Structure formats: C-alpha cells, structure tokens
Length: 449
Image (tube, rainbow, N blue to C red; front, top):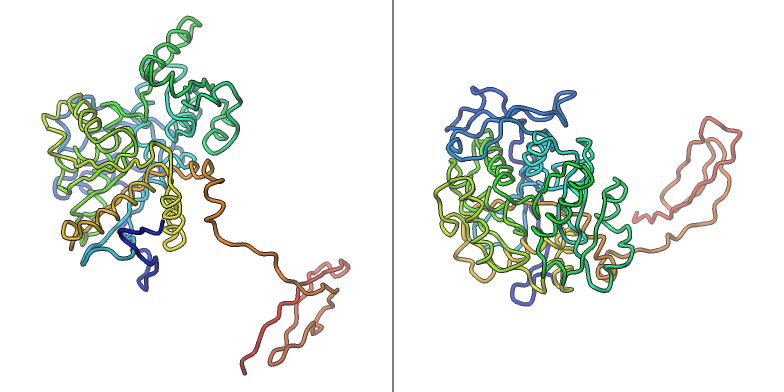
C-alpha cells in the first residue's frame, strides 16, 4: 500500500531528503554538557580500546532520583546516532518529521536493543554470569542482538525462540536473524506458539535456567526485548543524547517523539526521560503486538521499578498498529515499506518501524489538525534483517531488473578508436599489462546534435 486508500500520497518531493541535525560525540566534561541542566555523559566509543570496554556510568541530573542506576555499563553501541530531517510526502500543513537513526547503533544492525544491553550485560558480568538466556520470536531482533553482545563479552547465549506448531520440530534454517545467531554459535531451543502462550516467557526462561544451573553454569536471564526496569535506563540515556544533540544544534525543538512498541522498554525510557528532562515532547507509541492497555500496564510496572512516581497514561500515548498480528504483514504494509525506501532511502523493518511509520502517517492523514505545524522525531529502532523473512511476499513488489543489452565484445588496442557514433568519438585506455587480452563493452550513446 502506498498509504492508500484512506490517505493516498505520491512519494516524491522536490525537497532534499535529509537535513542533518548537529551530531556530536557525547561531551565528556561537565562544561560541555552543562547546558540547560544537561548532565555530563560518558564519552562515546571513539578512542582506540574504548569500544566494548567497561565504563563508569552516572545518570542525567534530572534522573538522579530514579532507582537501579548502575555504577558501570559496557560500551556496545556507536553513539550518538544521527538525527536528520525526513521529508515524507503529504504531511499536514507545517509539519516536519525528523528521524533518529538508532538503526545505525552498530553491533551487527542491532538497533534499539544495543542501548538496553549496555546496562543488562553489565549487570550479568557483575553477577558473575558465564551465559545469558533470553526469549523471543523466531526472527527476534532482540535475541540476535543478545547473541552478538554476549559473544563480544565472552558469554554463551541460550535463545528460546517461538515458532509455529508445524515448524517447531524442524531445522529453523538460516534466514535473517537466525543466520547471525547460528554463525555466532548461540544455543537455540524452539517452542511452539501454543506452548509459549500456555507456559509464558518467564517460566520458559526459568526452566532453562534451572537446567543450566544443574549443569554447573551461571546463567543470567534477560527478559523479552530486554524490557525490564534496568533495561529501561537505555532509553533514559537516549533522551540525554537527544537533549545534547538539540542543545548543540541550537535551532530545533521537537514537539513529539514517535516510536514503534514491541516489548515496552523503549517507550518507557523515552516517555520517562522526555517527561523529566528539558525535552518535554509528547511520546506516541504504536504497538505492534498486544493491545494498548497491556502496554500501559507493562510500562507502569517498568517505571514503578525505577520509583518514578509517575503514571504511564500521563507520559505516553499508545495506539494499536499490529494489523494482522505480530510479525505478520499485509501486502499494503509491505508495499508501504518498499515505497518509503524507494522515495527516501530509509529502509524500515516490517515488524516494528514499518508499522510504526505506517500508523503515524495514517493518523496524520486522519487527524491533520492534531499534527499541524509540529516537529516530530521518529525513532528508527532497526530490525533490517527481519526483511529477509519476507522475501516471498516482497518478490512481487521489489524493483525491476533486466539483462543488460550488450554489443559483441572485441579486443581493443592502445589508443585505438573503438567505436564511432554520430556526434561522438572516444577511446579506451589499455591496462599496463598490455600483453593481456582486454575486452570491452560498447555502449550506444545517442547524440541530439
């Protein structure tokens, strides 16, 4: 769907696709970061040896009252991620959309998961773990990101992956995230969707943890999506990063932040951070699984765990964008992803950000007054590898190809005019190894004069 039929657009624009917001490394001094109450942040992983290192962590001043702030984290991502203008077509009057490229956070395209894992894996190492356990769908971005991060830190990784009843006893293959996980040597246990629904992710992880403990291992359990109160700190920290980027740009202030929601930790951190910091932007989440009330309750639990004293309904608006269901797409949704990529160069994943942008633009079309004149920051949470699981559905939508029409190739000689075309004469140089036979393709070039 190219945003149709309710909100048809032509994905073309005469404006430049991208306008950068000043993107700088995290200031390492209070002097550089003390603008408008912005606290000093850890330095970015820019110096030799700083990537994958353990570093001290101090929360932003506006979040210093929250609980569970760790003393150290691991540097796993490439931060800050860029923010630039995203000229989507047919926006409401005066509306600007900017995009925060957390899809460029590094760690093998791990997207928003990196920010949470910096905190979670630091805790795992501090507790003396020698392996980690986590749970997700068969193409879980979080599970793949966890497998990468664990290997970086010399930890074994155990993944419990949910798949269909028909496939649970079969080799899961090497498509998308599974390829990376299996290359990394992650241990994969498959369960059916029915078993997952009956037992639940927490009980499944505890069952595997018990077995590993009996084997003498020291497992650390990471919840679905890395979304617990500790993981929420990843996007509290992301708000500090956005705040610093805005301060150093000096001419952009966002009215709204929009993001897809799949497990709750990202929106909890963004909403909490935006409320407490100088951003004060309204946070809008488009849920890609479960219903909005489930996520209001889940986010409430996360921010209660940080002793925030806030109500989830007051800090975030959550709307349903799951469509057919989690990781399921209509042809219109996939065509939308393709059309956005063709028009702007931004590739959205079909599970999270694709549905998030789809829902945002649909709402802008249905309620233009709500968005009129506002500056909106969309957070791209990554998930590119999930597209490989949609190859069959995308095959009829992808760009065209053709066999190149070539003239008969003939040997060429140094300095010899190879082909004369009306209005044009040209020569082709020969490599230094003149003893080798070199061939070329003649291209017809028409001349209007």
